[in-house]
Image 1 (cartoon, one colour):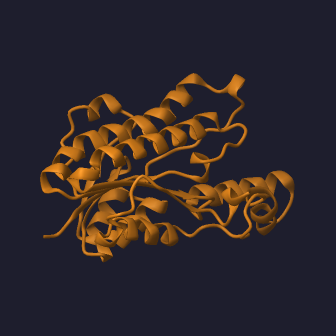
Image 2: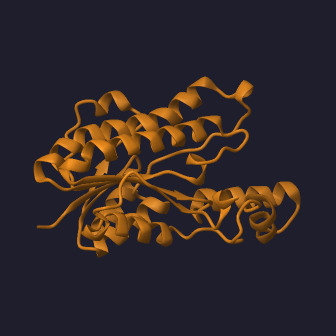
Image 3: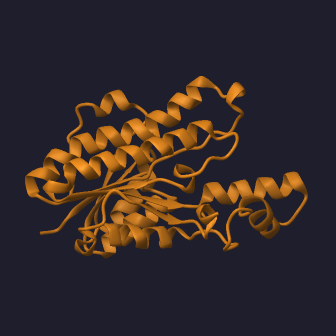
Length: 244
């Protein structure tokens, strides 16, 4: 039986790399993204299907029927500001998209997984799910919440053959991060390589960005039968950032 995987934020960056890897693993992949054209393009490439959805509209997810064997909660955004200057609606947006939506998708998917006695939930967290940085209150708190949600699902799903884990990359080479690098280089009047090493990767022992395909490889393992005893965990892929 071909397993069905849903990857949110699946049309670009980490999500696209995960979608491609799971398709290569033989899964039928649903690319869930608010960018309809990008989702359809990748789904067509993979022989999967597209699900055009705005996951920040959480009210619309309350009655969703999410039938899959593998759920990868990856969609996210970033807003940066001091707590006393943070726009409340931006805080709410990040929590809806990155914590409430994963809860609602898991809530909808778990009955199907329980009925089959097998399932995998992978939550794409971050080093910021384990550590904090200034000016990222919404992102850090949402990722910390996702870590807790993932562990609760792991405990509840254990007897049903369902595992739940987080993957925790540091800075990943995505279009969003590359734009940040370019902006920082311009702001500070230094080269992009210097931005990566001296600003973005100050805490990382390995001075390079994580590649999306590396995250996808870890997700691939966690969705496999070999990972049946791996649950309730947080797998760091951060070049040693959280080792300190």
